[in-house]
Length: 470
Image 1 (cartoon, rainbow, N blue to C red):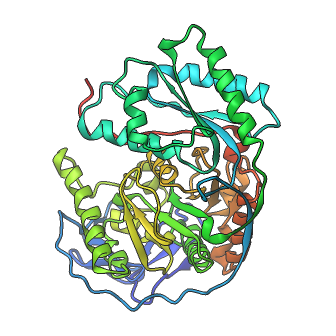
Image 2 (image 1 turned 180 degrees about the vertical axis):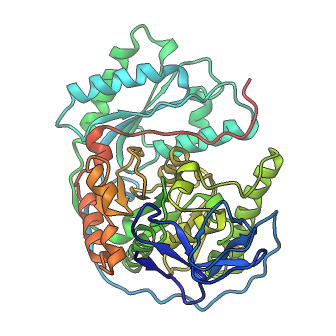
Image 3 (image 1 turned 90 degrees about the vertical axis):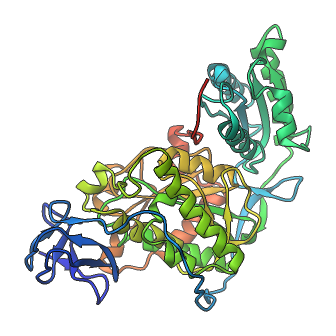
């Protein structure tokens, strides 16, 4: 049986084949109450004596994490990333931002018009094929009967979609009687380009499909004026996400994404890491990389505010690995987090974003939000990410409104689900360096190559909710 010891400090190794592939095995006797070490860090403690060579998992170990913490600002020296210059072919918008798709998006103010939006997207794509890269709608259940923070979060996320540069034009579709009615949402949007953003309240017109198609036609004519042109990598923003993780996620795909993130940042691009609960137990690694005390303080709030979110709802902060994660060999949250944060590479943390806040500082950004896949990719899109790198060990067909590059952690899932998986990081386990290959793939996607989520029409959103629904 082949095994891999990740760090010289580790007292467990990862099994690379057999029925327990991806699971941990003890490298020496570990007494009850002693730490289990993986990645060079504690991932929990033994709840009974563990023998050398014994399988280490939920039956004999437990998390060592508990509660909110106080943190000390102890910055490391600034990271020195390799510098290089690359370009991609994108669409330069009137506001100077760059999109990698030339689409028309229908953004609902409220869930009541979901089906109307879907029908308009179908009709618009049929009628205006050749004018743009397609007409798309994104269903959600909110925009009405929400109070306070939830109402504001819905508006911020929808605003992020309206302002996204992958959309050449946007039809904002409302009902008329909702909390987030079009006049209220227009106020939240602020200044808009009327060539690019149109509004339709369905209660205020006789035939909403005809009226909607006419407005989509105007947007299609505007979209037709854009052509791809060479763009500097500083105009590109890339989201970092993992879902359906397994025991190889922290060994192959996530470290690869981290190297690619560093490479992109070295070219001037921005990357965004989210899934705050999957930073718990590894947050100090990110905190010591903060560029300033201001960013450190924002990171501390990011972590502790999300822990308090769990506590406020009476939930266990550290009960995170899903059944699928556990089946794949991940036992505790700190083990999952140490694997997850590897997607951030070695770059300094430039900024911390709230849900719906747009990227404003180049480099590595942290974004608040849960690990839930659909909510996380929605938040990344709303922040302005042109595309998302999404590692997965167990597989998922999920797609964001933007191109979602599925990166397999193992070759088995890549072979089994070629219609889900775009890039196979499995060979990394045998020492192959795929950094340049993935960078090339990203530049091709940014320049027009379609991903599987686009080919299959898998584009979904879900808006974070934390309060009362009337």
